[in-house]
Image (cartoon, rainbow, N blue to C red; front, side, top):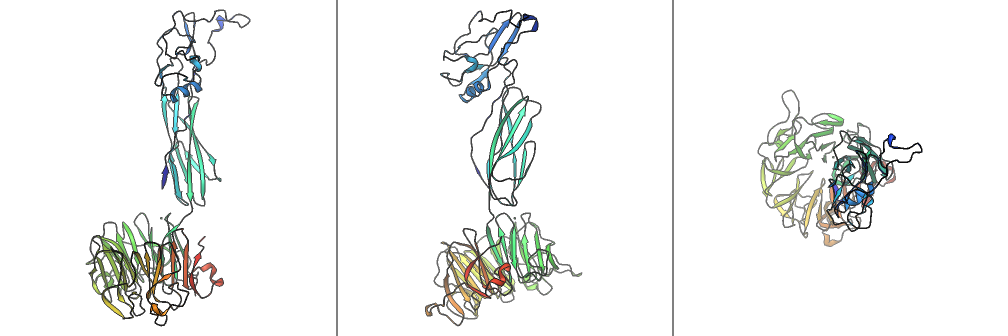
Length: 551
């Protein structure tokens, strides 16, 4: 959330007695209301350069005329202070010889820091701060707390607060004294609010602004036939096939966080560190999010076919699967004797992990030293180190591993029958990592079922692997130089999409988001996985990336 510096908007006020007139008791007035006792100058004039209040001697009484608020404001803005009276008998005069009556002085010619005589004026000067300007994303709560400072005078026993909106479309807000709250759900735009505080009959006010930005997708996950998009306000939106409850909307009939999607279920992690699953998993069949037992302080999730790997904030790895997934758990099981499922620590996994990725039957983990670890059906059940100097990882469903190293090169390991490792061959399996051919400055990788994506530092997107349903996003027929083998693209080929910040591959479709927040989709659309609301309007296969409206 961004904030901007700002100047005070300060209001000044006085608590006065008899402001603008001499206080004369009724006994001192004649029948016609005329003052019987003359008002005259003091016996001894005060020294120069001292601002004084207008005081009227009468009998044994001392009466006061107050400095007007405009004069107080001018003095304080000039750096003056409100000081004590230096003479018992004072009168209206030009004490600093600036040509202006001291009681109406606007500081003309007054040296900065000059003491202003305010005895008897009972000056109360308030300054209020409504808080800094803020920028948030739609859906965020704005909580502000104003405060008031007594610049001059005695601190009142109580302040009265009032808030009002002064700019932008109507935005329902609440306040309790100095505390202000605004729920920005459904609001996008610029708004201004003012708070006023009063005490002892005087008041001051200040404003602050709230800019509410439209939510933007920052991360994507693709399951077999559905997708999940994570927004920068922590919300998750799902679309596509939902017959198994994997959309998490409470229905099993439809076609703020980390999120990942498997074939028939979805995993999300909240900012509180809890993990939730919806769809068909080892936990249950549920169309609403269900808490994963045993998972705490989770920061990252990777979805397995009926389970998940969960990375904790301390670098340790938890996971849960069904009764046949012991190899993914390093030989352990997450199902107890009564059939209850909970997340357990993965034996043999390093304790300093920073990332995790999952395929159908394997897991990849990245530790804080840049070492990538792999285990699963094709790679062995015990986690083993396979590559160093790694900065990013991805796992394809069919036992495929992708890595990005610190020098910007991409590497592949495992299944490669369709050329998805991008090294120009269709060798079915690589047991040691091989470099991807022809790419530099790679910053991220993603994998679908049998296809791969590579994102370079300039936001370009490159693809390799199986393209039978246009899941690579390559509309044009590839050239012989790209080593086409049937519908397989064996070398990374650039996709006509720029400014890519995140990409994900499903089974036969793919999704991406660009730096302007636009979500794009392409590939097979047989069950609405490109966008469920437009299923009937789209062809069964979309070869070029198309924008998706998620509103």
